[in-house]
Length: 234
Image: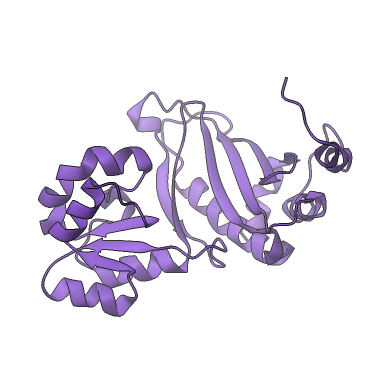
């Protein structure tokens, strides 16, 4: 078993084993349990009643968190012509085409998200094996392959995240930083849970939201009562 330090053990003592909390209580407890000097991220884990091995039960989507995630997102855009200028005007950090492909081939990955216009995908496909494993490959399903590059850049800068259910049926997503405070984090959670519920596959039977937990980067997990899910999105 992994060994935990004294500070983690003390933080875990604040969490009552087996007790389920509403969202605000859980967030407050997570914040109170934070013990390191840096501004920890607050992460949400949702276990869904789906079997991702079946395509019809795959849950994948995007959501713009109203308060962002507390991190500056560096956006790269593959575009040419007028779309290059559109991307630059929207605040993209890196804009180009073949030149960016060459930089990435040489091992550069100084960005967090990538957007591409559809006519650039043939070129971007040359580095798909480099971008894909890092989660950086533009994808039409999550809105990062589009001619509306200004909108894509603005959404990513504003806090748009993409998520996908893992093999175990769990979705993980960042909900902000400890410094956000309870209200802003709960607002982000509300937007995320609402999106998850909207994406429920028709093939999913029985309980869909099976378990929800929240934690900070270094802190213990805190269980949330799923019965509060509908209340938080009202």
